[in-house]
Image (cartoon, rainbow, N blue to C red):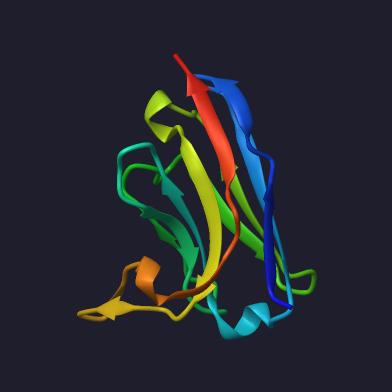
Length: 128
């Protein structure tokens, strides 16, 4: 059975940090693009950060570049998202996902429709 289980969400003040973890089981991490998406109330789900393939490449949304760091431990099937200098606009439910990498004009861009597996999400709330 495939499972993705997020942990590490919570309430933090502006400027604070959180580290999200995602424990995956039932499939091989190496075969998929692995991503963090987020969805705020009333907004569309957006790709925050991804590891498109097992070559060290990473993707960050412009809004989080320089503040968030994605990492993985493929031996343990674990995905992480270190979030620093958090802002109120980072408030959302964060989802771990795995699926097919999608490239547009040779540039990777996360596509929620290409994700095969999803976790149930972890709520991150940043107070002002």
